[in-house]
Length: 209
Image (cartoon, rainbow, N blue to C red; front, side):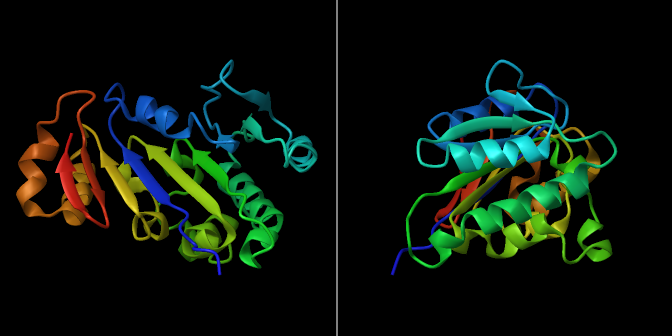
């Protein structure tokens, strides 16, 4: 039986704190990568598309050799587009779930508070991204979510993290949200982090880097 060890990684920090640099470092060696690029910030780094149907066809065609592609969703429909993409990845990765192969896919969602906002899963409990948060590891789907506003990202993502990176956060509610996960002793450290320094938490513990 294959080990189901895919990751749920949250990266949170204010603008300029270093979170995007960290995210790009984490995905630099991903052979099968889809970037959900809400602000169209990654032009030049990955193949770019605004058409989800074309993305699906490209990914299927290039599954064996690999793909690195950024999808820019339609403005105002980001949660729905992320749900549809997530359900496509679920179907794409059924072979992994049933132990027919061990090929993983990584989904990197930028501006996660826009694509998976607080309270969305209560409104749409059957949305695809919520499914990935809860069961995606069984399908070999790594999820990386990046946001300036930790407190505005819906709880099914924050509650299922295997790895958490907290950079400098500016908003009181984001400091509170980070403290709730890391613990009260880290509150002062969270508030005083310089740019490109962060607190990292996984199943083995917490460390400041």
